[in-house]
Length: 296
Image 1: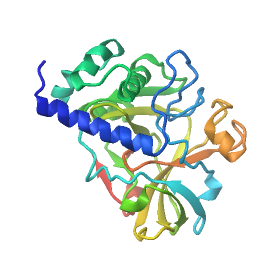
Image 2: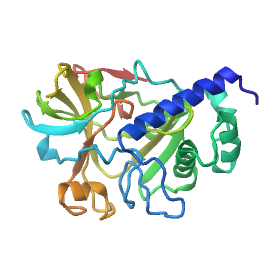
Image 3: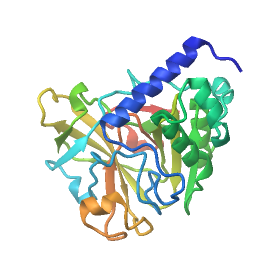
């Protein structure tokens, strides 16, 4: 396989911008490869940290906080995937790039990163979580390196004939890359979804999503928010997910420290960043929902 200098430069630039974004929000994208309990997937169960979530700024809350007029401090990344984020590689091109921990030296050489760089550590962590780390009980996971492979995984979870939609957080202002108070300006809408697939961006030189389905109950909400900072005039149409059963989560999970509760004592909710996706089956009550969704 041969890549042009321009292609390698473009992918490397994308990765550099992604790394700058992670650094700016204080997220540690690299974990200790010898510490099996040092990372955690977005489902939060059995581990203590969450590379998919920004612990220094991500605010956890409970379902009782989802009410009209309530104020919640939230950090939304200041980049809109519909306009600024790079797109997936085509499946045929993605297949040409080995996505394997054993091929990390080759990948570092391909994209021009040294073994001691922060990019190398982030790539190692992504490959480890995608390939080496086993799913927890009740979880089905997959790392998508192309849109086609992501849709195949969603079809696998929902069924080959089921139509589905991707829900994303929409319409945040460019000044949204700060922690600020947001007021819930409309009654939150619960989206009826018997199954969900959550997909989270992973640090890598090209677009990779960690997608997973969890059998334990979760609820999805669409929430209209307005920021308090100057320039935050737009209404943010945010996607929130509430995990109803936290009894199997690690007692050391960050959310328990934030909320001052114990595993299993309460459902825990969080908002999705704009570049993350929640796939849900299409049900009639989706008609008329605020915000933007795409259907497949």
